[in-house]
Amino acid sequence: MPRAVVSSLLLALFLVVASPASAGPGSNPNAEFIADLVCEEVVSTQEKVTCQRCRNSWDAPVNNTKNVANQSYPLAPAFVLAAGETRTFEGTLQVPGGSPPSFTGPSVRYEWKIRGRLEAFGNDPDSGFQSLRVGTR
Image (cartoon, rainbow, N blue to C red):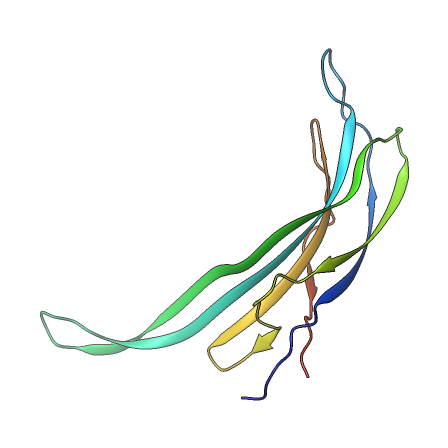
């Protein structure tokens, strides 16, 4: 397997359009912009299974997914959005140390995803997760 190098920095740019939530008494109209960076290990293979009673054998699918990196980065301090206001947030994110690079093999793959989101009172709009390749050479 070729040696892969994880890039230490990523540049992320997000655009989120939001309207402030219906603010009731005592609510906090401030919003904070956060970027979430996630890496999942996805294993898809087959294993030989044998029935203990009848001794029949067959190949059974094995599908496992687990997070190997999950980091949130605040990119903007609390702010107030006016109705229909659009803001652009830019930031540099560091890949957590020891994380694997993007990789696809015969039975395992490492998938990186990133999303931008507002953390605010009420509905928290987000960009949805977008696929991302993390440095391979």
